[in-house]
Length: 455
Ligand code: IFM
Image 1 (cartoon, rainbow, N blue to C red):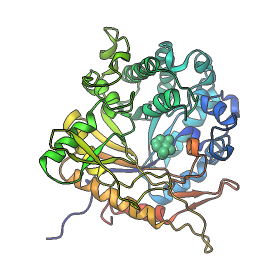
Image 2 (cartoon, rainbow, N blue to C red):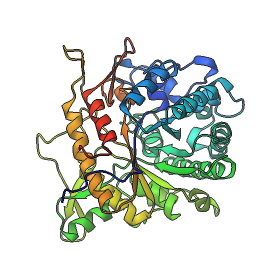
Image 3 (tube, rainbow, N blue to C red):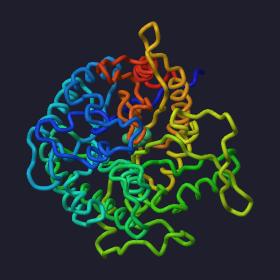
Image 4 (cartoon, protein in one colour):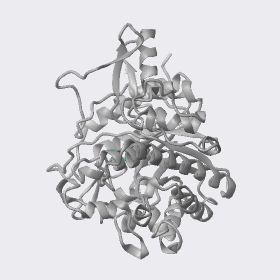
């Protein structure tokens, strides 16, 4: 009998983007500045001096992108809201024109039977709030709740799917401690844990606001980066166990591990910190904090790119197995690790018992327009085929992964790498703003129409 290679009937196939990376129009219609608007204008931070001032100009070209989504047969589009477009200073005055833009996006998506999945925070901290201390100031929790409430009041009659925050490891860890993302700070350990705690509280406050004020039944998720993830090199129980433990260990650096973000949200406590080198820097936790952080959510969003492989060392620890010289890697230098889309969902489900979405996954590549006018990207198709086959294994074993969002819909602004890493299913000519559907986009379209059968 032929094996059924299709995903479950209700599986959602989508693509994703974020506001700063795609919208451009950084000063249009009363928008305020975010830390990224300011940071990219300071010399020396971004490859080639690139900025997101124009990016993919999605603010003006949304209808073009919508036509492409339709042509691809996308069932869902994940995008984010640019906080200072809606509230220019981060708190106070609301910019109705900014809200109108998202309202129209939602309207147009729904008219075309594409389900909007909205991320409320994908790193555009309003510059005005940064000047008030940003994530280091506990008031941010209240400001975030107010902003979320403005968005929910306007859009929740039509939008059901919400993701509170995307990859706090980046906008807290890399931005405030690592110094490589806006606003480019290198605060000490004590402060980084405080900022992380505020970000978790802000997530909880957003969940509370959505549950209390949404006009339709909401489905709420949270999407930390799932890079702290070890896949066993064999099926030996001891290798599996070692990788599972390593995946949820508090880690060797401040706030880098996934459990740092997911344990508080799902389990209502910080991860086990015995032996954690930063234990002495942990923040003061007020009595009501963990309850606020762990309001029930509906799904975990997994953003999966590069991860690790590991095995047991014979003493209960995990040894990371290094990639061989010349092993497959992306344009960003990230090792290709498809097994993460099997082991990640499996480990997360076993620990957290929450439904999952793959909210991001994709390949950065050097794509260009060939002489025939098309964009041929066989590596991306091969990458996706490998990752999606692993995901299908997880789904077939009953791990409840509800959908997959390819990162990204179009090539866009890749943070500190500027425009040097292309992640899209659709090629963006950043000079003319012309779009060309890549071979991978055509292929992904067939994945969707066959519900995964062709992978
Ligand atoms: O482009 C980013 C996105 O903004 C967050 N997740 C990882 C992607 C690729 O680096």
